[in-house]
Length: 107
Length: 118
Image (cartoon, rainbow over all chains, first blue to last red; front, side, top):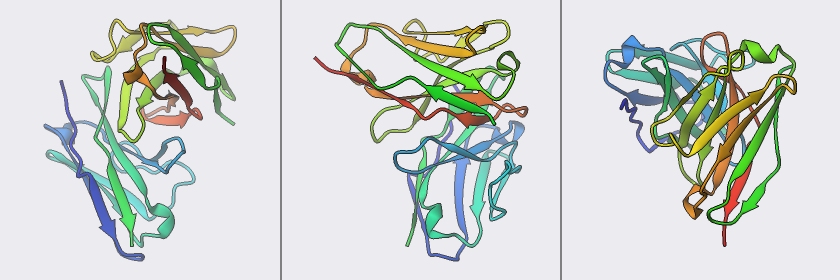
């Protein structure tokens, strides 16, 4: 079955750029999505179709996807961006796969 | 506005079954698939399966195949997720989520905590 791998944790200083990676076999041939989840809350979609932002998501969130790696980039990171981030893709267009999640700490 | 409102927390004994509901509003229910996602305490998101709300077709994760049943009632604009033969290992928050036009999980319910304890 298809698998997506993420680093368990990442840290960034306020105002700096955070990058979170997601790896999977030929992931660049699929669309990648990213979700933000804060403690006790439901996930929120922040990036879909590799680099599109849903309405209401700040411009500081961006995404890319090529080869075997998708990347979520948060520019000018704010304290409110501290959360768990999950990547997601479709396998064979019928099965949803999530990455293991990355805990982003803003310190 | 699109809303997915899930049923309340459940406490069940091992071996029992549980059925969680997800009531949709703010859009044409049959136009978008509904997914179910599990999250055990402190753990990652796990995709369980999805239902085509229009024709009722389903697809399940291999991990949950045979243990979960996803259905829908179009007259009630509601999707359901039923788990059987519960064990303590399935204690988790269960989310429903609706796809967007780009097959992303755009709208999420508030989550339902299912606790399995003797």
